[in-house]
Length: 132
Image (cartoon, rainbow, N blue to C red):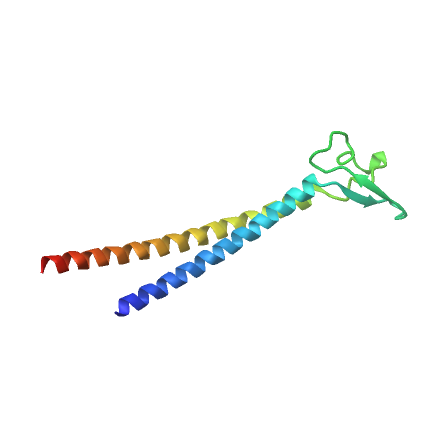
């Protein structure tokens, strides 16, 4: 029965690896949501003097140039939410998602292959018992 104990330990480790992968995928999803929120939600920016705030349109859904033209037009919204921040968040999510997907796949496949091998051993045992 040592192989059964080893097999159960193997499945437990496979489930833990899969759980780490699912956790990393959840982190990547949160990063994607953060990036989308930065791009589609309106925001407020303080004036240069710091005495007042201005309502700014979302970066992605702007029809006029308020989010893209810059300070040369007297726009206080231009530098408040820059594209590099959203791109950086999106860029950080890619390796997290790749590692999470890999770990989740390894854990799931390992667990299923172990269950399949156990089922095959049991079927072979039943077939051998039926022949005797």
